[in-house]
Image 1 (tube, rainbow, N blue to C red):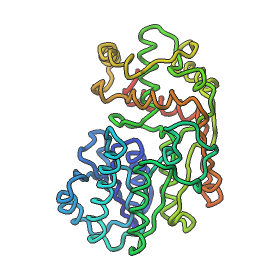
Image 2: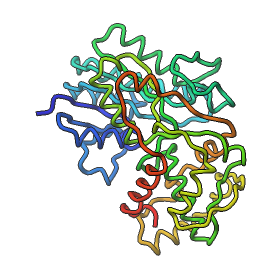
Image 3: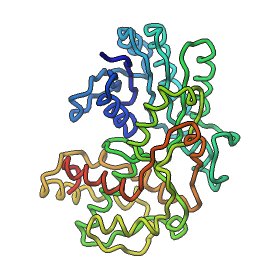
Image 4: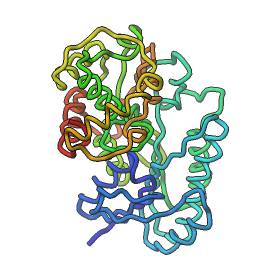
Length: 350
C-alpha cells in the first residue's frame, strides 16, 4: 500500500517530469501530475489538468484530493520582466498551497526548485563556488519571494520544506523552456544534416570557463531523499552532477557522439541563426520518421544563448548536500550520451 501521495506541479517540465516518473516507479509512492495540459507520452502517470494561475480552478480541482502528503513544486511561467516573473510565479505557488493545505491536513513536506540565479549567475561574475549561505543580491528575483512565502507559511504548518538549487537541468522533456540537452541535440542534428562540424556557439571565454549541470535523474533522487531526511527539513541545497567541466574539453566528446568533426568555437545567436531552420528540421523529421513535434517547441534557443554566453566560471558547492547525507553523482559526459540515446530511442532526434 502507498504510504506517500505526491502532487507534482509542473509535471511536464524537465524537472517535474523526471521527479514524477521516478517517484511513481518507487515502492510506497502514489503520484499525481498537475499541469494545464496532458502529455500524451506519460500514459502511466495519473494526471490532473489544472490552471495554477486560476485560484478557483485550483480550489475546485485540488480540494478533491484529501490525502496529499508531499507537494513538489516544479511549475514555472515565463514573463518578460523580473517584476512580472515575481507576480506570476508567486501566484502559482500561493494558489497551489491555498488549495492543497485545507484539504490535505496530513501534508508533510514541500519541495521547491530554484537555480543558480539565486546567486546572480545571470547578471555577471559572482563568488564561486557559491554556497547556500551566501547573501542575496540586491534585485528582483522570484526565487526569493517564493522562498519567503514558504518560510512564512511553514511557521503555522505541520509540514517542512526543502529548496534545491540545480544548474542547467538536463533531462528528457520537450516543449519546456529550460532544457540544455534538447538544445544541444537539435543543434547538433541540424548541423550534421547540413554537413557542418559541431561548433560551440559561444565565445572563446565561455568555451574555457568552468561550468556544471544537473542531471534530472540526480535531482529526482535528491527529491525523494529530502522527503525522508530530517537533515533536509527547512534547508536549501545546491545539487549538481558533482563534477565541473569546461566546454573546451566536453564539446569534442559530444561531437564524437554525433559522429561529427568538432569545429572551432564561433559565437552565434541561436535565437537568430536557428529561427530559419524549421524547414530543415521538418526534412529531418520526415526522413527519419521522428515524432512530429512543432519546431517552435523542440528547443529553447534563448536558453541556449544564455548558457553558452556565460563567459565566467559558474560553479556551486555541494558540500552541504553531501554532509547532509545525499551521495549521488554522475559523470556529465556519460549523462549527455545517455540522454541522447534516450532521445534517439523515442525518435525525437535521428
